[in-house]
Image 1 (cartoon, helix red, strand yellow):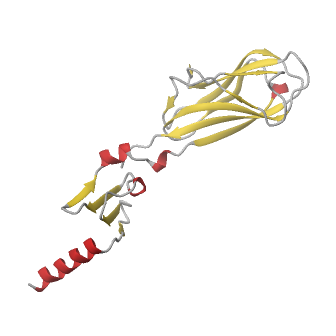
Image 2 (cartoon, rainbow, N blue to C red):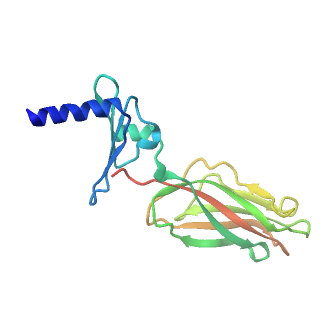
Image 3 (cartoon, rainbow, N blue to C red):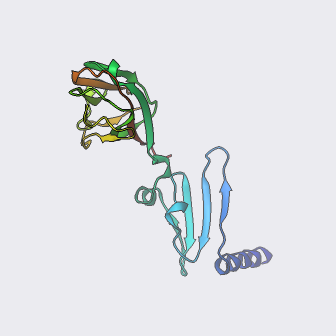
Length: 199
């Protein structure tokens, strides 16, 4: 009887006062979150998290499938920055077989000018390759005209396919249609989104 009464008091307190209780399990690193009154905000639902809330009638729980529609905070974009001296660029690889070491996809690319080009009629086109397959889209056409002034950003074309990679995949950067630059430098910006499996 005493145990039942204690449990009842605890439940009444849980319903009456909004509270968040987090229990961390050392091995699984699983978070158990209790909230009352309403369905929790998206920030409470992460992979590896079981979320329970009281909707006024019964306790409800967030599931793994809920997390696929709510934000997955482990998929925050990563920007890989690669400095490139344009006078060194010739047709062929500019970067060869870089391995990120995790699964993911390339979502966009751009080139930021850090030292403007001053000599006219120079050009090259940069594209990305995963393994031996070209990414569909993501080509950056650099010219004397658009590689100035300092701070200019040249966006790549939209990436539409062949942009996913595994933990063992390699990424390369290739140059083509090059008329050699005399000067100029910039940073190739590759935006990557990681794609971890749910625990």
